[in-house]
Amino acid sequence: MCIVVFIWQAHPRYPLLLLLNRDEFHDRPTKPISWWEGDEIVGGKDELAGGTWLACSRKGKLGFLTNVMEPPPYPERKSRGGLIMKFLESDKSPEEFANEVIKEADEYNGFNLVLADIHSKVMVYVTNRPKAVRVSVQVVSPGIHVLSNAQLDSPWFKTERLGQNFKELLDKHSERGGEVQLKEMVKELMRDTVRAESSRLPGIRRPEYELPASSIFVECDTPMGRYGTRSTAALSVTATGNISIYEEYLEKETWKVQTVEYQIENVKGAKNVKGAKLPK
Image (cartoon, rainbow, N blue to C red; front, top):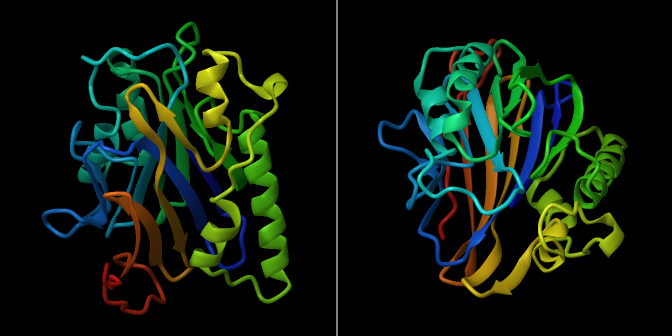
């Protein structure tokens, strides 16, 4: 389970401002957000399946993904996180790539995929669930959106709570010029452990499964081991193309912090910003 809140093309300072919690088993091999081989793409990496949940490129393309809550998935299906990698490595626009995904959507377990191009100001959303509905590409409109483990902007307890809290925090920042501190946003928004009442659970799986996953920040013990929020990423893109990523991540049951900052290529009015990473 994961949750993402973002504002797209509707903020005076940031074409994109995003916060994401990734939930996974604590013992699943994972690399935190970092530059991949070739130094063109930065993102986290699932070392078991080889994919990612959030990544972006020097060319200004970006993708993030959540799984869909449904009965236990088929383990032999393709890695959903590999879709983001393919998009960033391709020359295709978000719409072109999403239309390619539609052709093989049934080869994956349930996913929600968001793809964006900062240069063209285009963001699209595609999901292969529910199965009975024809897969299509949706252009994401300017504004605040929340994505968890159902369709984009579904009115789940945690998505409504995070969306409202995000809006209130942005309103507070607007009173002081709109500039935000990513670390502060993570602390105020993404560590929320309030769970839903039983009446607000989606009713897709058993309550003992859904209840622990109904909070923004997830932490629980399962028969298969400790499960919960493994990392939180906050990402901002400025009008001049500067991307800043702040990440808090769990490594051997210890929380660590890092930042990555870089400049998108070929943005008018851009200033060179050297990549930076805080010591672990």
